[in-house]
Image (cartoon, rainbow, N blue to C red; front, side, top):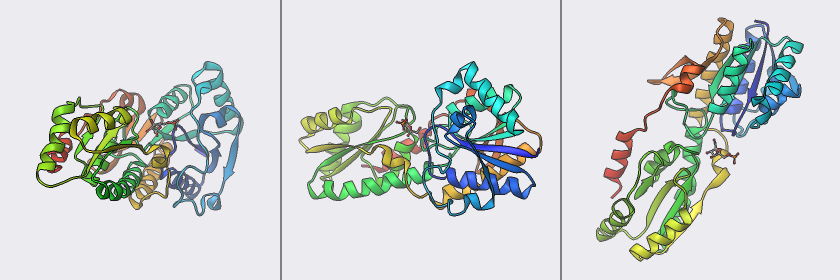
Length: 320
Ligand code: F6P
């Protein structure tokens, strides 16, 4: 294998740049040429490729976002778009592609692999919703970002004896809400994986906590549960505690990646390039039992990631 390409796709995640950097550095060290594809699969369709050298990725390891830009590409899901992407690969002699993104990006990598362009997926998403992978690139940084912001909300919430109802990203998954909820000591954490009872899980918990002398509350709500404005109103009516809703939004996707995300991204990317060198295709790099490993993309897409009920139980037990 002499020429590969790397792209970032879907929602950006902190640590994607560290992954791109490690792909480029590993490939060049192994005697390969590397192209950076601009704006995900759209860049393959439109032939927007940049030759990368060792210095193209200097000063990027600490930067959030993605220097290659990213996009969600409906066009790539069409036969015509896919064919244009394949033509671009053939025109440049690209023999392998490293795709950094989430499930949607892996479906694209699977389809490209099936049509003869070997692809390796690296899990980059703040949602931590890749079934085969314990921790995705970006999840740790986003958790820390949420914690940082909720700590600030706590200051004002505590000063006014209020309840802060905070919506955290995660699409259909509650991982980010749970990890951040534990780290900020939330009174309740609502996630889409577990149905909740308004009286038992919010009102009674707040009342019990108030009975022990606490007068301010943080309720963390995953995006997949949503409706934080209505929830804040309902909480105020049911408990008499003045309540405010905050939707943290896209700020959660930004910021300099944590050391943990930089290391994870570097390790996964290096591993992924070595998979290509071994002639492997249609694999996704993952973390299992804290070890880097890989799975067939098709199998990985069919896997289920059970929600961590023990962590959720623990969070509830210590949050009163
Ligand atoms: O997948 C990452 C994510 O930030 C989700 O948490 C969120 O639901 C979605 O992307 C938002 O997408 P967009 O940036 O396209 O609005």
